[in-house]
Picture 1: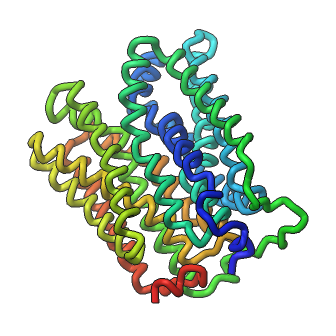
Picture 2: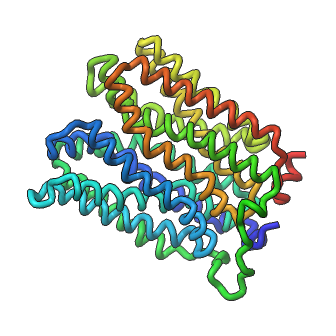
Picture 3: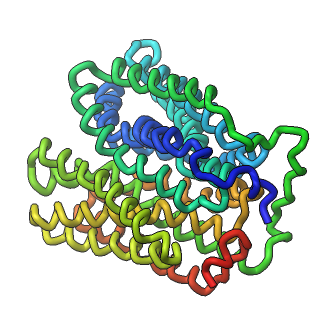
Length: 410
């Protein structure tokens, strides 16, 4: 049973709307923004976009090294404190990235340094940490709160692309990065003003942290970690490989840059649709089942793209968005089926490590696959999508172990 289960029992005490907006800012600035910015960076350094994506991938690997530590920090210091520092580091990274336009800083070393700061900021400010905050505040209603948080994040890609593409084209890399840096800095300040409710793990009255080691886990918890980590790694690989390259893919397919941006932006709003469906109907269904259904929508959407027609491309992006929208909630809540609030951050840290590796290597491998063959690019993504769905399905064989939620699934 979680130490923090009695911290609060009403969802209005959870800052879900602030946490939700934080995910628009985090994913928009620290991830999706590189789709439009990579062209400007490549031109500035006189290199290819694939090289820029490779450097970004290598830098984001720092996330994989930090993810377990970030989870531990969330449990120890409170997830809101981790979010605050993450946004601050991201802001510093973007101030530096904008300075790439200064001649004495126009080099790959400075680019790598800025990408590392942004990668660390991303590790400390995205869904894993935001979901930890929701569980810490109100474990009983965690599924609903996770759904609300992810609902906001669903529009991050669309809002980013329709704003940063024209902004960077009109004003250039420096001012685009400056805008992103000030947004991140402002949100760090906003989080610092947010009271942590009645949950504060650093107070003397708080019970000591429960040990969390592999040897102390039971067989169901070990299986849950392995399955969720593996499925998440595959899913995030294809997610990062596709989302940063959809514009390139559709431009190759239809030879229209404006249409490519519009098509690539479709999946964002449909992530919101998927999360609305999950919030309205899914809360009555085992989250493992809704996650499996969502996981199967993704390979279906990718197969539809192989037809090469505009109507099917629109349908495919809608299915792709809905699938990912529901899966985000599923991965966040299913972890809570096996691990309580007192160890949720550390469990997510372990589970999230392969996901971050997938997030890191996806853009570079995806870029090289797309350069080699458009058909090969989609085919490889279909294989990874099916592998993730099959792994997620195997969770039905693992009995939930968190007593806060296990009784409701009997």
